[in-house]
Image (cartoon, rainbow, N blue to C red; front, side):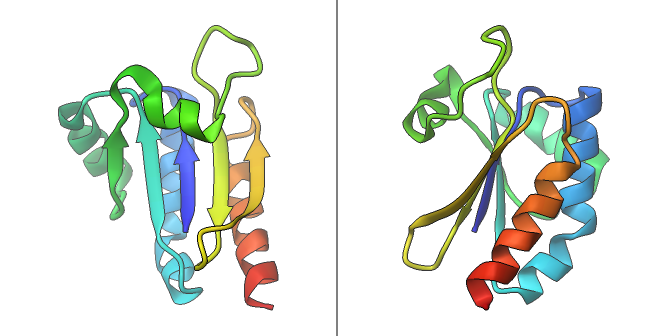
Amino acid sequence: MIIYFYPKDFTAGCTAETKTFGENYDAILDMGAEILGISSDSSESHGSFAQECGAKFPLLADAGGKVRELYGAKSPFGLIPGRVTFVVDKQGVVRHVFSSQLRPKQHIAEAIEALKAISG
């Protein structure tokens, strides 16, 4: 499972990140994983954003940032929510964490490499 937290729907970095996850969705499914995107935006916003980005995976609304807080997906800058990706194995163990506010497309590359390492 890939769980990625992103700052805000329809921003340049988040759009690039979500589109890239969408472009790699079938390959990730073939590796036995699913993708889940999370931000504090509303479900309505997520619906439009997913459609614009071609995301075939769920985008969850985390009102108040409670899920983000549970995962410890903090911002390195403190002003905007952090961009953090977690790769979780089938036993529910977090196997890889990548945090980078400024390299949104790198999240996908990191996640795919982690999935390859998990599957051996």
